[in-house]
Length: 142
Image 1 (cartoon, rainbow, N blue to C red):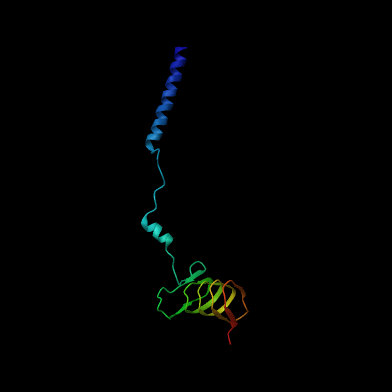
Image 2: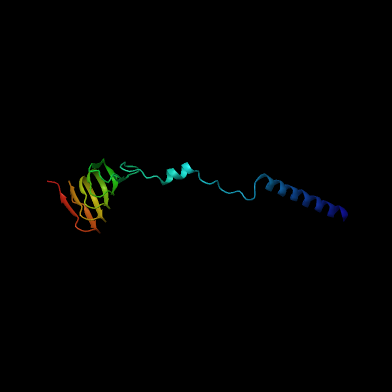
């Protein structure tokens, strides 16, 4: 009977040592590493005036600028800068957050207005329009 107890204690001791050895190799309070400043900056950075993955944010941060903002073909465009002229290629969906903008587009299927006093001139078929702003106009090019 003493051998059975001795063998049981020996097996339990070996299991305990093995378990302690495993926890000693890895810290018990291990956490995922915190993101570095460079990785969080890249994730938060927005690129303007360039079609990336089918979408473009059109914006000019110079308040005194009267330059024309242009873009080539893209699936979707979001026009942000007010009091600007935009010349767009073929854009599937245009969202106009700007106000007092003059916009010409080669062709588009949908236009959503949240800004006011904008004018869009398009070629091709008339797009579907959702006007949540005020005094926006859309017309075919001459």
